[in-house]
Length: 335
Image 1 (spheres, rainbow, N blue to C red):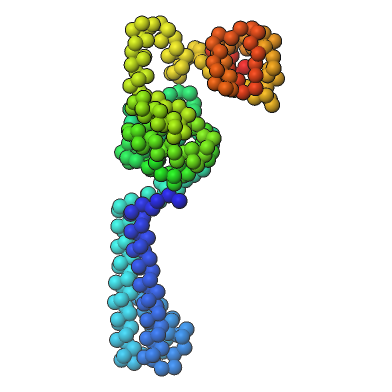
Image 2 (tube, rainbow, N blue to C red; image 1 turned 135 degrees about the vertical axis):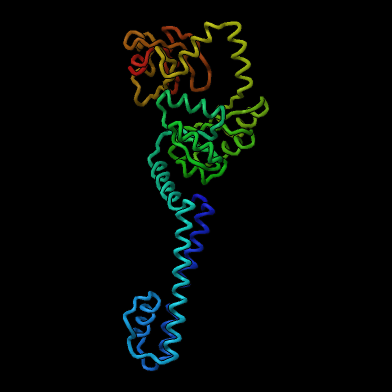
């Protein structure tokens, strides 16, 4: 279950105190009238207590003795104090945004329940913002989680689904629908935090794909040992891209144009072959006629054992579990 907000916890406690105070006053009032006014039925004493505490002024049930009237005065003042306490707590709750927080929490729960086959983006720093922008360009369903409320508000202002929480905690991942998630992207600031997220995500949903940011080659190895499907260092990748831009600028521009951005003329995409539904498993690329039927070009094949076949020939056999890496327009790849 999600942790309770300190404001909510304090308000619940104070409201419980107010409720117990009124219950105690009714009990004391009912017993007091029965003891002080001989012959009163419990219902008469309870009714007299109710109209006294509420100060409605209906009059006495039976004529009161002096002791009974002094007791009624005590109940009136005690009731006013109790009502004042509860009204003060409600006013403070409104001023401090408790009810607004409750409404936000309900909206968040509905949002989380609606998520399915989505990505959980942990962290909305410089890396996380870029990932969110790419997901948005691709039309991918995702939710951002960050422990800093100001950062979450920035993500929401950018039009993203975002919640405030600690992504290293199991309860946060459960709240974000880890069981229904398609993948988790760990873009937190430290390797230790990302490691915790990887361990939690894989424990809660072993089938979920986890991609993590890492600061060094050593961190990459540790994250992969912990269960990360892919670990990427922005520094290592950035250095390679700088070198590629210097040595092969046109190739890099071509690959960038196929991999990122929302206004692409062509795409690089991967497709997993499932032998139960794909009629081309067991056929060669020539027999499948993918190029002639769709226009998409198969530029590589990743076998289920991890072996990569770049530039497959027409005689390359398609197997169950192969991942086809294809290039083409959006319409060609859909076909």
